[in-house]
Amino acid sequence: MKKPIKLISLILSLLLFFAFAGCDIGYTLLRYKTAAKAGLETYAKEGAYTPENWEVVLGLVESGRAAVDAAADKDGVDNAVTTACNAIDEVPKESEMEFLPFVVGYEGISHDAASLWLDLAELVRSLEELQKLCDEHNYFPFQENKPDYHWELSKKIRDYDEIYFDKNTLILYFFTESSLDIGTTQADTIIVQDKVLTLNMLRISTGAGKDAMTFWAFLIEVNQSDVASVTEIRAVQNLEIAEN
Image (cartoon, rainbow, N blue to C red; front, side, top):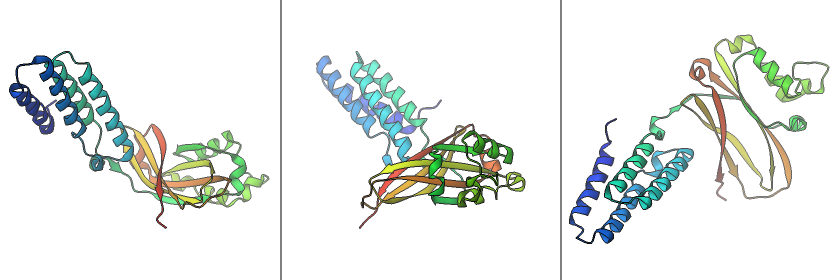
């Protein structure tokens, strides 16, 4: 793999530093390590990544710094820097990621469904899968003799028939929240990366308080072709403080 221009520039600057730093090898190596760690810290820019991937980058920078500290000589430092930078280059930038179009079919607090106490994020590709998933969690939106049948959430779930699943896929995201904060949650973005679908949720806090258990339910519609390769789904909640 070709070295990115940023990595080449960083290594060249370190080589020049070492060449002109002086004759005290021990002191020079210490300063070389300091310069290397500073270079790692500025190698990537926070704004270029999603919050989740930026956390990955920070972890790689920290590992690189530790490897630099452990290096016995200049070559060891160079190898540590190269390894860390190559790993950082493998983390997709936000501009490189695939953001999927989606429609929220149902969202909000479901007081009826609070009795389910469900916490799940599932990608459902067929009506049969949907019915099976509901049965597995003792939720019965398709059975008229069950109280669940009359919930607003259940009415919406029954809208997803075989015709819908012919070209579409459904994301079910249910979670319970025990919070001292009044706010709202909404679907923000959906990203597919390496067969993993990440559903980014945005939690907007108002700062007002209450002590209550809340059940959130989201039914999110995506195109079948957009998620054909997906084998795993993750939900990530990001917090934003609303301005007063």
